[in-house]
Image (cartoon, rainbow, N blue to C red; front, side, top):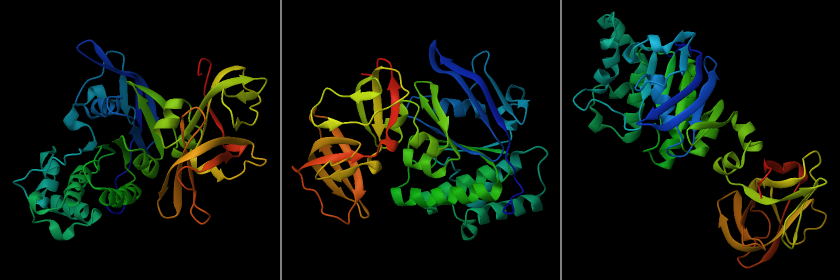
Length: 362
């Protein structure tokens, strides 16, 4: 296992939907996942990401017309307990009366045909090594930290060498430092095993850190799919722009390529090639510079500094514009620091402006 004997499966979802008591909670989900890909389902609570995961795992059945295939085989033909899928939950779900080794061995002992004792012992040893818990095999779950319990749950999910691994907010109950540490471990394990991973989270930073691609869910449907860089730098909607990281959004009108706001002390570069009408544009805080004088900046908005937050290498500056909207700049800390109440300009280059909505946006 540690030498990469497990290999990922291709997963295809076609027009998945799910209703409960007449209430539609998921509709029209389509997705192709290539073998060995790390795909994250991201969205707010109730957006449909965990429902989709449950359908893949076999914990629920899709509505009529929805299809799922694993390596070309319909999952409708395979009972949940026979799908070549490992699952890790947020609450670990370890057996408290079993040792770590017994917990990890459990899925192997349930398989038919059941591996022999020597094979089970070897695979358990490999799984313990994979999660760096070789010295903890004889302990029980209540003798482990939260992070160690999560590693045991992960080892139990991969010990039978599944082709697909489903992770349902597995790091959500951990503190920030431990969560970041286990994110690195997940990346390492993914590289070593080559298994296909579907990871559910509502944590945007986690999704950006771990994923090959991100599927953004909204109100039971897929809003956008792309690499972390694609979604962050070129969001396809205002929802994606605001959900995936901080953003500054401006609603105005476009005429002959010129964006205008009903607001004093603001100017914007032209946006050629976009139809006239209501429009929303966005710029990320790290692309905004805090200036005493707007000078020749292509885009500039006058603000009153409302808060200044020092975070080591960067400074988060919050400003209020003439319309009372809050704007954010994230800048370096090696220059003069603005103070609350200062009148400043937020400036940015035209190349960093993104259009996130047109037609009725204003």
